Length: 347
Picture 1 (cartoon, one colour):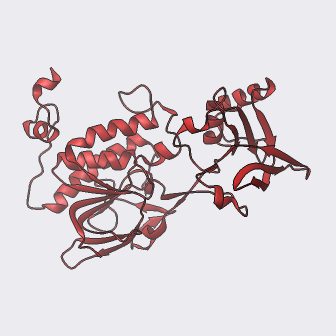
Picture 2 (tube, rainbow, N blue to C red):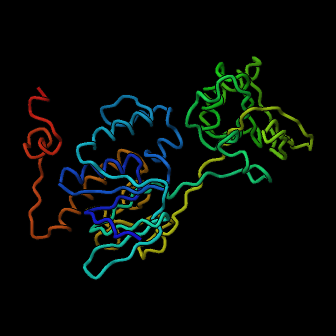
Picture 3 (cartoon, rainbow, N blue to C red):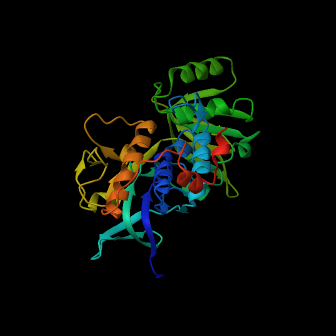
């Protein structure tokens, strides 16, 4: 075991709110490390709707989840945060000197003065298809997320699910894939109504196929997945040939070890003081969808506001004897220097 990495702040969660937390802390000269259970930066925006438009980010009429994350990464670049991905925070222990010793599922350790929990609704795990033998094809022909849409070009694709992700990708691959078949266990969808209407129109036009039923078997040949068996509500079995199987059963959020850290929990969310977004444990803050308070709204822009107040509270926590000055990025030479810009940039 290596010596713990020492830092001012650990941010748990690399979604939009966690990334903006880096920015707000950076303006106050607080150095950060970011830990996330997902294999890439972006949280729900990248996992659930990377190419779906977002309309309620102030001053940005429309952007995709991917564009939002990319812009946030550009914004925090001057502060050089270090990211530790594909690992969960498994332990958190307060030390005699007031700092927190954090351990992860990859056996990394951190010694930090403050902790910011920006873990959305918890650590995401994809809901998987429980079918014998399927594991052999995962990330080869069976996928729970789309990282590179180009790899499905001219392929016979079967997509399972009834939510936005399933419908969005089914519509996206029309005209790109050799064929698109959508499977859902019932003829009732949770996706946006316009997406459902578009899907039904494409099915009526013969440009894609919809099957109501559940996957009950796999067919393979020489180590390759060649098809699936789908059983409908009447017990009839349909055989479908395929090249790729995309499963969008949703992501299962788990509060995980956070529930054991002695924080005040309300309905699987962390209670906070809205003056500073500190939890019931001094030095530990919670921002974004993970927290709860009267009037809470689970919006990205609300999380941005929470991150700003939490940063100022952390600065006061770290240096109680120091008066924290409110400075503006428009006029402050100190902040211009931290951001690597000059007043001329804004002329």
